Amino acid sequence: MKRKIINGLKYWGQLLLLPVYWLSFLVPENKNIWVFGSTFGRRFADNPRYFYLYVSQHSAYQSDKLAQRVDAWKKEGHEWKADEDCLTIRAVWISHNKEIVSFLQSNGYEAYYYHSLKGIWMALRAGVYLFDNYSKDINFWQSGRALKVNMWHGIPLKKIQADNRFDLFRHPKNSWDKFKCFPRNLSDEKPSHYVLTTSEFMRPIFSSAFRTEHVLVSGYPRNDRLISDVLENVLPELEENELKKITSFRERDSRGKMVYYMPTFRDSEKKFFDVMQLESFQQFLKENHILFCVKLHPKSKLNAQFKELQGEAIQVIDKDADPYTFLEEADVLVTDYSSIYFDFLLTDKSVVFFDYDLEEYLSDTREMYFDYEAFTPGMKAKNQEELEEALKEAVCHQKVTDMTENEKYQEIKRNVFDETQNAASPRMVQDIKDILKIR
Image (cartoon, rainbow, N blue to C red):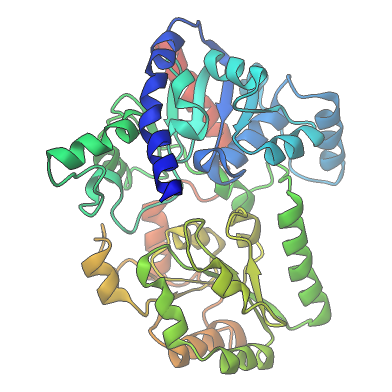
């Protein structure tokens, strides 16, 4: 009860910050300061992370320490190229997590805590806000004059935002619900914001979901590591340790394959434990030289339950880690309705859809933009036996590991991605700078 009261006071107390927001319009913005944030300021992840790394590594504002890192990375033979469009940009990460700030600063990147004097000043002066949920990922109350670009966190299979009729914030049932949603909706998406997608095919979906005509088709920077070599990833200790476990597994077993399980967040995900006999599944994994890496959605309530499965053949990656650090390591992806499978299409490796709760999910949780069967190019499994058979096909027999000749797989990839060979980050820089010129 006490926590509920405190959360309620915080929620409605936001309204006291409205004067700060109005005053932020009086502070002249600097179009060369671009601030980045992710997941309500809690994580260093997704599209903002990789775009921030790219811009920082190509900017004239980089610190001596970062310049040395970039030089060392180039000498290793990576395909780094100068990008003149980035030279004048000052990339700054703003976080609500002091550990993230410390980590980035220790690696030569510019980052500040959102309530620090430097963090507040940068948030007020920034000409561009780049985030993957809402501008509150950085600091909505200081964002008045900035160009806001929502880089989002997925290519949707399931309906999102205004298109999702189950979303009570965007579709309140009555006047009282509408009143309760008011503080939150202040900082949610607006028609003046820009939103990022990956193809002209996806443009009308994003336009409808975010109620805006301002849709950028630049591609997703988080996929740049999958298809190019334009930036160096910088790993927090948590991710580095998880990667070492995968490397160690492969060193122990030359036949070893990493299967990456990424379920989406929903109430019925707990049914995983009803359809799986985990002791026999562990044995199956060992016999078939598989490391089953589980990465839950950050909102999942099953983290503790899955952590209990950690063992020789199952690795449970922290749910707040960035999933794209591990996606490039995967030999096969197992998911259900998570949009990460679209990104994985860029690898031409096989996907298995473990959709044990499909009917319940569609009726109670989400509708989809596309016919599920037609738009999911991979084997389907509704129970443990079917999952094991699918993994045998994908990993052991290797009949579907290379999907370059699979017509359905390639057609969906062409629809979802306008560009499958070249990095998105350089295009994104150009697109934002073009917008800034006309504002």
